[in-house]
Length: 142
Length: 142
Image 1 (cartoon, each protein chain N blue to C red):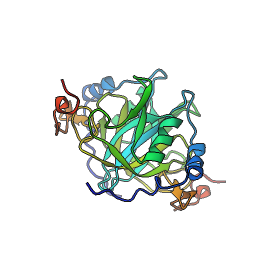
Image 2: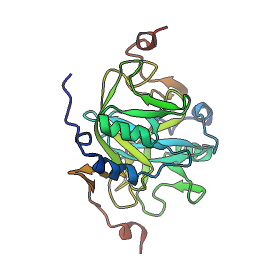
Image 3: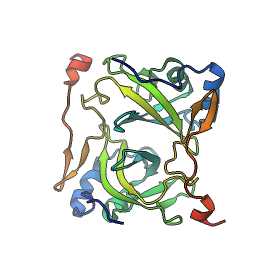
Image 4: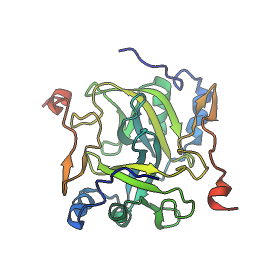
């Protein structure tokens, strides 16, 4: 797969520290990160990063979150192969939310759907508005 | 301004309750909500909703958040006029993040920028990659 340029990943550590230091991590040391497919604009998912996860993401160009359930770094795609290559990392006005423009390999959602936001009201019912593109068993094994 | 159809706002209270009951509010009773411009895909902002804010948003079609700093309902645009009309509300796979597709009047960011995600690394510096379209004083008074 050919990747788009990744302007944030070829910076020296001092430049990356400027972004790291501008983030206002919350009381648990976390910041929300929205992942958006860089070319289509599709919002894929939202997850959390601690400072180490953000530092690794910026240094490697592979998006890494902090798993609150596992209390461990979560290198997106390490089990499923559905990695996210970082294209650009943006910080919001008050420093408590990140927007990661990414190039998503395969699907972002653990249910096998392209994105996680597949439930909405339709015809008076809470409905799944997108179907899985991949069986979860194919991503994670049984 | 002509508005797009708003499929979630003409539902009966029982239908809205299905979505409200599917949300996993956190320990503070809050859920993260990403606002995305429905037609361009631009991610505008991320803020928080409690159950009352989400209920009001679904009932009125005007996006209402919970202001953590003011500890009050925050009817987006009530001071600035920069309202968000709800087009569709989507819930993610694990129920802890909402994606609101909206039609944003004017600008979403309190700095006068169209969206809040305007800081990024460029040339070794943390740079503002978008300029204000409106002076904040014009939005909120001096």
